[in-house]
Amino acid sequence: MTEIKLKRVYEDPENDDGFRVLVDRLWPRGMRKDHLKYDLWAKDITPSPNLRKWFHEDIKNRWDDFVAMYQKELDGADAVKDFIKKIESYNIVTLLYASREPVYNHANILKAYLEKVLGKM
Image (tube, rainbow, N blue to C red; front, side):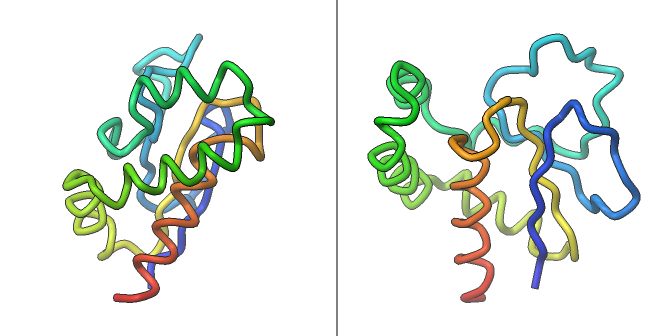
């Protein structure tokens, strides 16, 4: 089974990162494109712009609703199915995100979702 890891884009790459995937819709602030080491930019599996904007208006109070709504978006997205096909052959996949918030960010939800789906395969 594929192991899913999380890492901020601002952390240095390591040999055990495996397949590195940027999972932010927007390019990380202050990051030069030639500096970030990534294998895939999967912006199609990030929260929709409206959901992201709504969530960022009140992150901690909207977290539980955000989790449910983002999971619903993931369930209905063909891009997620395509993404899973791309990553299932890798032993390790590291999801790269820019948020300073280690807990209340979409990458945690995506990681849990992928682990659940990949675990059923």
